Image (cartoon, rainbow, N blue to C red; front, side, top):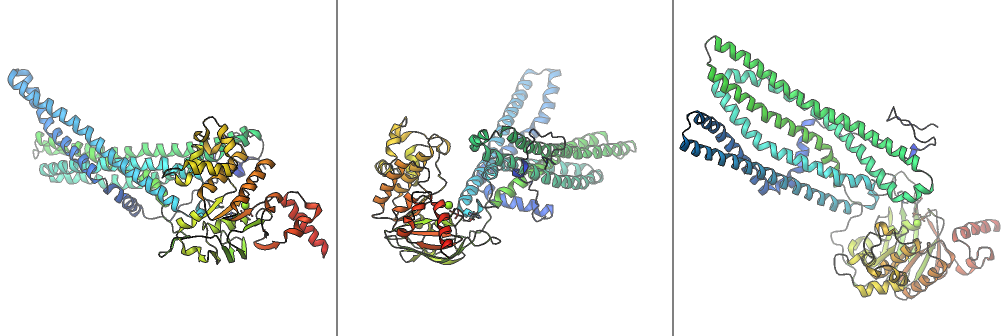
Length: 625
Ligand code: ADP
Ligand code: MG
């Protein structure tokens, strides 16, 4: 099939190969479509607690705005006075009035500056609190939110917490900076107009509902476009987040052109949406210009009134001046409204990260482990990741005695890693129970459970930071015990290579540990699990990237550990499995104990890769029948 780039009509594909099935779909799903007034209200309500907590800065900012409006109202008549003195040149009065004017102007400048400073302080502090809260809630979310087919990509989340939180700050600022000053000016001018001519005031006021309606309608459109634009830029961010760490893979596959095409497509989609948004933002103020035409018609009517003698010229000048100063805050309100409409999708998306109900919950009366010997029992465990998917584990039973080492083998996709995730309560089983030392793990505090179960995961996770920080990750907030770090590294056979690094344990290993080899990364990951000193240790294919020599040393290390740990080794290599007392085959969600003696004695599979071995074995088994 041809490269399908429907989003960009004029786009010429840069490569002839088929790519775009990898392209993120354009997610324009609209959630429940509230009425726009209630949605605006909802957004404001969401922000309320965060803005309220900044009330002291906000009040100070508004106080400054009051001062600046007050000084303005003093400056205007003062300018007139000073100008009349210029002709007569009474030096003393001129100097007096002049210095009053100078003080007023200076006071206004200072007040204006502090108004903005205080209000930005409030807006950015509110956004900071929102960010922190969103991130905190994000970390509390179930693992299932991040992985699987419905998982939200890291790039998308990163975009929400960086750019969209900044958008929220802009919105909050615009609202704070408009509400009080505009309201002050609106009331002041409206009162003045009413006092001069109630009839003309009413006539002028008639234009306002139309402008407000038009603005409301366009504002709603702006919200929708902004939402699309946020999604397209989030797609760019997700894409970059996925592709940049995989740059080696891209180059090795000669995929630069193809990636260029994918990037161009995403970037172009964003350009189009953003342009639409900018156009809408340009259109909205023009609608407010209609007010000026309204003012013009009032001007014509006022001239009529003057010529008929029912209105004097001075009155008209004051009235029209008030009208002009009335339009200004209305424009301000319009602008703030737009800013709110533009920020609404950001508010929605950002806070949607915090609205969830965990599936894995800690019970109210959950307790800490006191002393753990490390007996582990899986009882009739059934599990599937998503409702519409088949069972990954099917009534599985496994009993591991304290201090025992057990190996899980089997084809990939059989459910071995899933078993480890269940033991850590990253997911809860559909049915069945898991016990550690006869405690149902659902009755144990999560923190305590995860302290006593150590995991070396299949996908090694290292952070940019020093070697010591990576090994002592658990104690990052406390003090990392260097002695234990070195012990753990020695046991994991990592000490030797660490000492050869430029700064030893203080060497920064780069993003995702990129300056280390696969085997080195694995040994660091093992050292990290050892540092934790948990009673139950899961090694999920932890030795797959080690060379034969390192693996032997790690195996010896694990053998040493086996003395006082319960070890669950998940492996696909025979050598790794051999140290286990018992070996279980996990296949198709079921568990079957293999008798090691018979299993390993098959001459054909001796020393081979375990996956091959399992395949061969099933051939043997079938041939027996
Ligand atoms: P392995 O035995 O290779 O460790 P896993 O336990 O990782 O196998 O996976 C078991 C099955 O569950 C596989 O079929 C896999 O596709 C599926 N699976 C794993 N993680 C998820 C997930 N987050 N969402 C949906 N399915 C998953
Ligand atoms: Mg696995």
